[in-house]
Length: 191
Image (cartoon, rainbow, N blue to C red; front, top):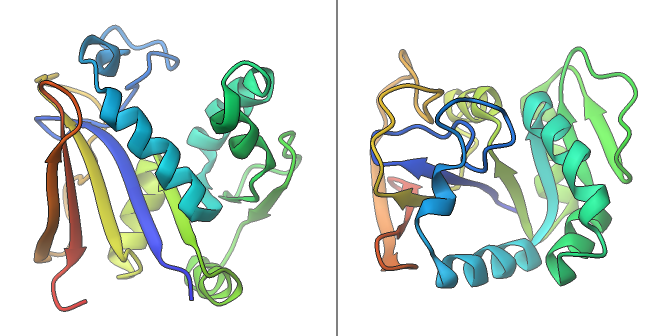
């Protein structure tokens, strides 16, 4: 049975928006200022452990615009990203262009239940702030993997916005993946 894993690049003040700079914000690209060689190795291992990606529309569209062109230039990571099944939660996306993509437009809980019963590996969620909020509200997240960068952005889309129901988390791992970058792994308390 697969588990839902939320994996995010996050600033110290909780922002997950535009970590790579592709979204065109004036503060984007903040992850590149902090080398994290062990973090890159972790991201590859994380992708290898996943059977499917579950994405929101905005993140999907950004990935779909970038990754197909990088299939042959980023080694195993690019090949895996492109070949892996992708499930997009969207009420507006009708013609996905990226290979191996399925669109879910209705029952998110039902779609996640189907994915966890179909796949044994991780169901990897990256970016996708709105989707992460929905998954969290439905208590469907099994693990949060947060690569915390030492930057205060002061604005931008946050991983945990206003209004979610309070929840306790248990720290299951903490380690440095770069000189100033930490990887924190949490699970909902009691799981």
